[in-house]
Amino acid sequence: MKVSQIAAAIEEFAPLSIQEQWDNSGLSVGSPSQEVSGVMIGFDCTPELVDEAVASGCNMVVTHHPLIFGGIKRITPEDPVGLTIIKAVRAGVAVYAAHTTADKVPGGVSGAMASRLGLQNISILEPEGDGNYGLGMVGDLPSPLSYEQALALVKSAFGLKMIRASRDPGVPVSRIAMCGGSGQSLMDAARAAGAQLYLCGDVSYHHFFTAPGFAVADIGHFESEVEIVDVLFSHLRKKFPNFAVHVSKALQDSNPIKYI
Image (cartoon, rainbow, N blue to C red; front, side, top):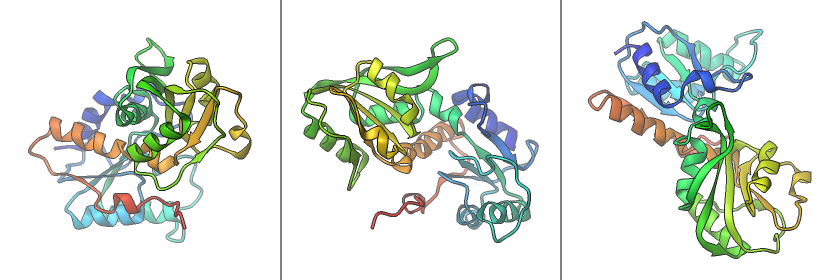
């Protein structure tokens, strides 16, 4: 098995052509022609994940967030990104990311969020191109809920101990929109799509002042997107049922944000 074959399988599901212009999805470390002994899937590419891959006999790491976002002026072990690159290169570990590519496909990040909530009549919140991909999803609950009930459903579905939410919108919640990760830029689109509740991560203070009939809930960046790891794992296992594909055992502890 070669890196190019793993990459091609991922890109059947999440093609590089649809990534955002600022993104850096794809192969960032290694060669497409490199032989792969095993794949380790995680959320962020960290020194710990590379160490886990090596210890598990894997020489390719696949994550949601790219290891390299912008330009790198120096690579030193004092910097987490630099240390990760050093470890990967020394160990011959290829590094691949499916970031906004996996955000924009219906079966990706936001689609997984909608499925967790049991929504119906699901559609893309901000469609692009031919309308078959884009950021965010929106769908209907089987029956309307009070705001308190809707937030309880969200907490239960995503295993949340706490949630940051705006005040009660004053109407029942029958339609929910969502975008995994940093999604506050789609708040207007969510409201225009008829949603009474919008879920995403990284919401700033002033965005919690919402209009009547509309509410926003910040469920966390990691918490909203982490299921993509299992999505990628399932996709690769179906494509290569007899190949070594692993999910990081430290996945749930890899969230850099701690709630104390």
